Length: 260
Image 1 (cartoon, one colour):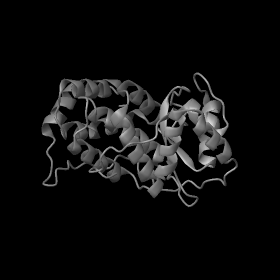
Image 2: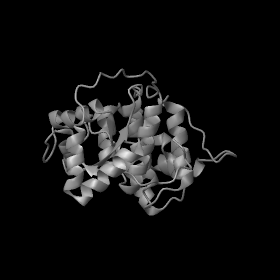
Image 3: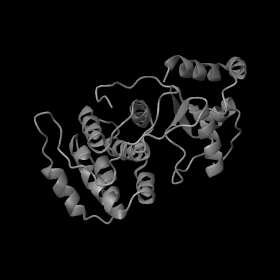
Image 4: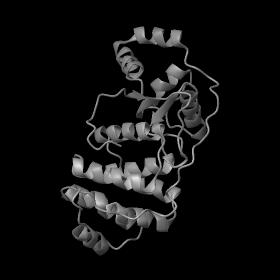
């Protein structure tokens, strides 16, 4: 992720609206089948939903806002994308603890990700979109710790929590950020005194980056082969829906002109 990348306008639409455009009707809370129907229809039409709604530990409602990333037939996600996605959400929950993310925090978070994962081009574009999305809609730390507990072992959660003190220490440490970090540490049975000690001991290098060790088992770089598309967007239907309301028109205009 480019730490200097400024927040740019992105297309935002509800899961229900996206589903309608893809020919999939969803309403209310989505079960695994409902999430899969929307996610697979989007992928089959060369769109990736961000944030990812597919993992079984992710609650999704038809009213939730998402954005989409367009990809080409040769683009692939790595198998580390899910773990990197969760790590980025955690980092953004921390960096947004005081109400805004500082450039130094984003740089440190980018370093943590690059230290632990190997990315494909599609990974990078999707994670950049997730970072921008999180600047507008910060992830909830309680939901993130729950997701971590479903995705990782206690030892891995503790290791990642300790590593993330470097993100917290990279910017101003206000009361909001302290609350986020205390929630993170208590969720995984870590001593709060260790949190404060780590925050005090973090020292950045001349580049402004705080060095970290790689987190065991998180680093993976294989590519997930993708199926051939089974369903494609009906462009005539999309054109018709664009004319229905000004709101939908703006959404689709942003989606299709962005190219990603």
